[in-house]
Amino acid sequence: MIRALALAAALAALPALARPPRLTLLISVDALGSDVLLRNRHRLKGGLGQLLAQGAYFPYARYGYAECRTAPGHSTLSTGANPWRHGIVDNRWVDRSTMKRVFAFADDAHPVLEAPQTPGQDSGPAHLQAETLADRLRLATQERGKAVALSLKSHAAIPLAGRAGQAWWFNTSVGKFVTGTWYTKEFPAWVKALNERKLPEASFHKKWELMRPASEYVGEDDVPSEADVYGLGRTFPHPLDGGLPSPGPTFYKAFGVSPDSHDVLVEAAKAAIAGEGLGKDDVPDLLAVSFTGTDLVFHEYGPYSWEMQDSLLRLDRAMGQLIAAAERAAGGRANLVIALSADHGGAAAPEQWAATGLPARRVNPVQLAEGLTQALRQQFGGDVTATFEQLDVYLGGKTHQGGAVDATVRRAAAAWLAKHPALVTAVASDDLFTATDAGGYLAGMRKSYYAGRSGDVLVMARPFHLLYADADGTNHGTPHAYDAQVPMVFAGKGVKPGMYLEEIDPVDFAPTLAALLEMGMPASAEGKPRFEVLTGK
View 1: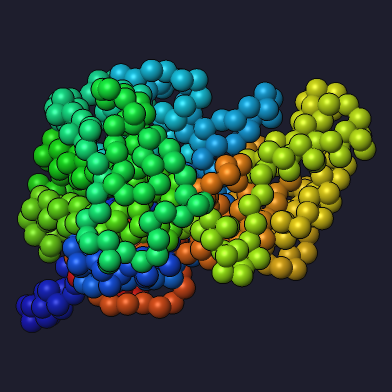
View 2: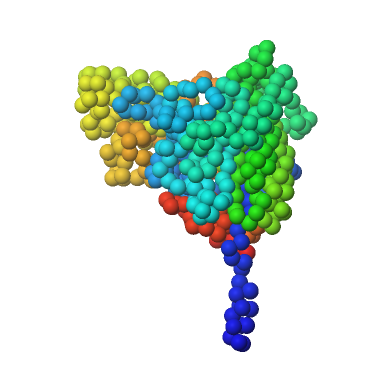
């Protein structure tokens, strides 16, 4: 009897097991590099600022693979794996049989519902080769736990939802949230009601105004390297009608760039919480929200722009509303876990860097491919053709072994590219895993490589060199710190707050959430739970 009482007392003293949070809120902020967040942190007083102050904050998470892009970034956050395992090497790649680009989540067998059908568009998770956190939760709870992912981008929502969750994204052709038939054959009532509210239309004929006085923004509003797209212009205030007399695709694209899109995503999250009953019982649910507007602002205006500063201020406010809604749904912070990270950071426009004296340069990959094509045809004859897709170079030609080139051509292409002043290295796929990694770049390139999807030749741009066909705006996609370094934050049930300055890898994101959810890790995960932030309670 005494032993039984002692055992019961000992067990009672252990951390409460089998009591995961009712709701986990996973937030991804597209293109939120560590540098951008650290520079603006002191101005953030709302939900994002409070999350940084009250959570376990890692400012220096850094992707270990080479091509830091949206689709692979979200896939890594959700699977705990690098592209060499999950298979999503970029937002798109080249199909060697046709030499045409294929979107990462194209699935013609499962088309998009209630939107025009474009061959090869993102619509389902068939290309994803690894289990996601959402998949693991659905299996662990025997499908009682729910998982919903929301974004403006299909290639953010789909990898967060995986195969067993729900993915909803905003379609600019029709101006509403859609999904593919992989996930459902008919919109549920809550999505129908959300779309019937026509929330984006409230921004039509409005202007994107500064949230704070102009004196509080750093730098200049009008910078020559900024783009002018969708009728937005380069300076505040930005008209949001897309130059149209009534809402249409160009307006919806302008709306996506504006921070009004943050607020609509929060409304969509609230609708998902109510419609799916997220957090209402002790079976854990997952709500993933990827804020896209920051990335769209980044590409057109850059990470130092007034537009990026204002977008973050408005995201800070919107995130406060999102977290409050999640807390209410879970019955308080004691039943809630919040996790935040980003899929990638981003480069400044090289013209801005060059103005400060850095060795920066904008390089047109189309022209680079043309030069390589000409050189290969002179050496080998025939119709060999080179196509660039970010850091991947695809080679083809009908006269070369039924469309595929051989190792001799691949190595010749790598040798030609390695001499280009904008590239620090180039390697044929044949040699990627055997070549000497003198500069340390091949390690990340290997983690980005997936046979059949990655290029015949892999290249690496020098720091501050931008491989980008547009004459203005900017891009991301390298392992350099400005592209690869992102924040990682955990808060809520079972989390020990504080700032943790160790550099970690985002492959740890999903394993840490799995530990907080008290379930196994996604099957292909390479990362590990960050034990230093876990209380075990």
